[in-house]
Image (cartoon, rainbow, N blue to C red; front, side):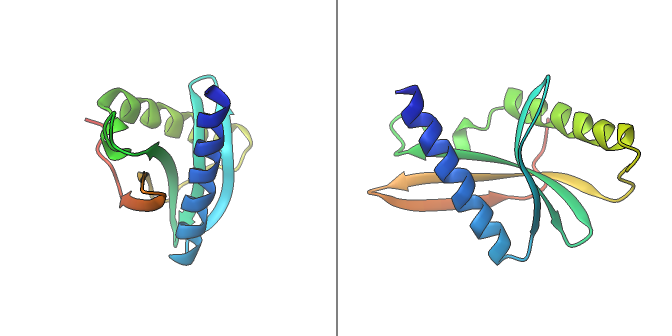
Length: 124
């Protein structure tokens, strides 16, 4: 069961990455880890650094993928963003530009992905 969820998550991240590239985002990393967790995707949207959380669900029996992005998860994303920015500083490549947190929710309905892209999500 856990392997099945991981495979679904990896598929969702790949699907989201392809979607973002079609929009012109420049992907720079995936699966970045630190003590607070993992950032699914990191990209540039023109001159803005964007970290992207990808949520993928099969159906809506337990809520949609978008509904799974709870306040607690959004706050964790804010900590992850700060950790990533600190890692850039530590590597002596500080980021001085704009940044934001996006979320992509993918819900499979009858095998067809329904994608929602939320830009600059609130952490409150």
